[in-house]
Image (tube, rainbow, N blue to C red; front, side, top):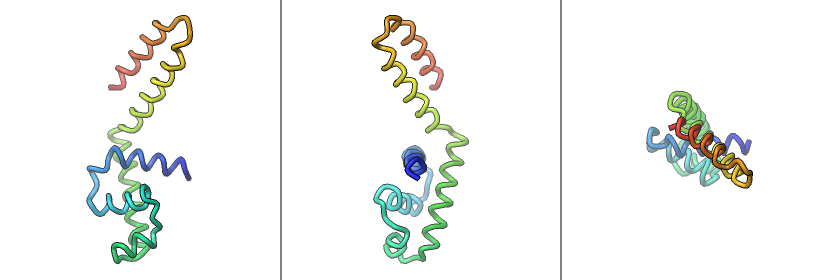
Length: 109
């Protein structure tokens, strides 16, 4: 569950500008502020089911955006390459390893 929450939070960071204000509000309250569905429904004077449906549809939209634009995937790969570069520093063949990693990082852009 924590892995899903982390992924949705990243997707929300990347794609929130593509969402409606209502979708942004629900997602912020549910994922960032840790509100329950009931608390959100009381805040907006709607049913708990309406909040649930909106959040699930928004999650699906975020995944669809990611499938098309792949911003989070590229970010994740960059983070992995940077970590590999950091781990390569103490080794003796640092320059060659760093050049290779930098080339891979450059290709992601």
